[in-house]
Image 1 (cartoon, rainbow, N blue to C red):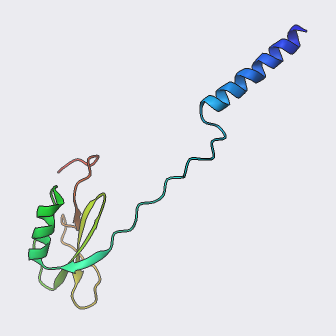
Image 2: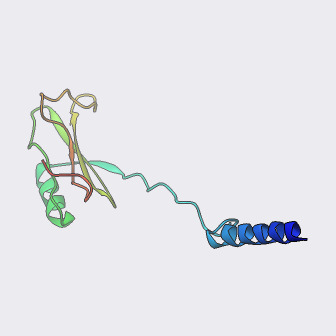
Image 3: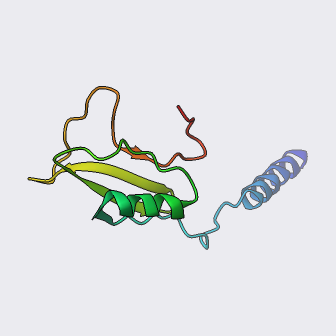
Length: 110
């Protein structure tokens, strides 16, 4: 009799814990990936306007001969890339330089 009571109590506690931590709750939607940012070619002047409107720093290395500035904006920030004017590919950058994005709160500034 005591063994049956212990088993019933263990089952009741297990069901309670399962329900308390949200087991079996199928109503919650799974997190979706953020929408991809649409990139566009901009002038240096347009990039300066975007940086002003962004409300946070937008880092870039200035104009580079033979390249176009590509900008993509989304909820995480602004991404700036340099593309070759002739074929649209990303050029090899000198050591220490690279395309830049606005800093996220979790990334340290350098």
